[in-house]
Image 1: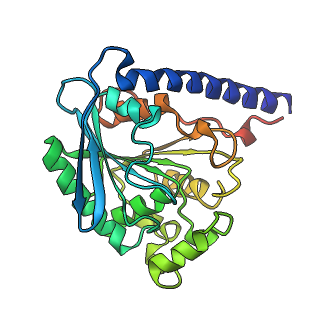
Image 2 (image 1 turned 30 degrees about the vertical axis):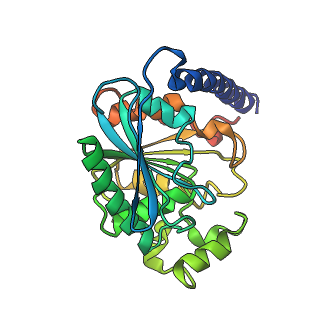
Amino acid sequence: MRTALLTRASLIVRVLVVAVLATLLVGATSGASGEKAGGVIRGELEGQQVRVSLPTGDAEPRGLAIYFHGQGNGVDDRADGAWLGALLRSGWAVAASAFHDESWGNEASTRDVELLTEWAEDQTGVETSLWVSGSMGGAVSLNAMVHGAEPPQCWYGVKPAIALTEMDRVVGARRFIAEAYGGPVPDDRNPVRNMDQLPEDVRYRVVASPEDELVGLRDNAGALISQLTGRGFDITYHLVVGPHEDPSHFDPIDLEQFGDYCLDDGDSPPSDTPPSQTAD
């Protein structure tokens, strides 16, 4: 028990350090360091608002990432914060779409991914390397991989909500999912049922908390980690603390490190030790 408490204490210390660094990054990204803030290009594709944020400074983008927002958010979700700002300061361009709002990975959202990818690559002059997703965005992005969108080299999933029939604790999710699919979720659009179709050559990283009260670790992130690890995929995981909305999920240091690894410019961030393995 004492070891488990020490492990949790060390996680909390890391969260506090990340929070301080995130605060500093917000100022730096907005130009406090004297560095030129990147521009934003906006557009509309088949009725969906899209944007691409260009990297900080004057250099050409070294990579292009796509961000998939969660339920209740939109094209500007986290676009100006420290988390995605870490990628911008590292030389990435970051694209996003409204993805038909609360689409939960339906056919329309997969079409959005294809349109956004082509548009953002034309705007930036670089190919898409990284997909970053939050909560519902996990379902949108993984469904797109399975249903025809060109997979990226790397996928980074924060508290991925991928068991669509287990979303009763997420306020409004049952209604939104039914509306998105016109009824029950088809099996081929429930990502947790289609993990055997995910591409093997993608590098995966999962960020999740055992204390997430809305998107349960066992049925979602845990299932993904277990399945892909068992198949020998390149998958690592970062265990954080607190409930679904805890800021520890959005770790700019971890995201930037994984971005470097995606571009073969650094080592893979390691997996954390599961709490169950540190308990007495």
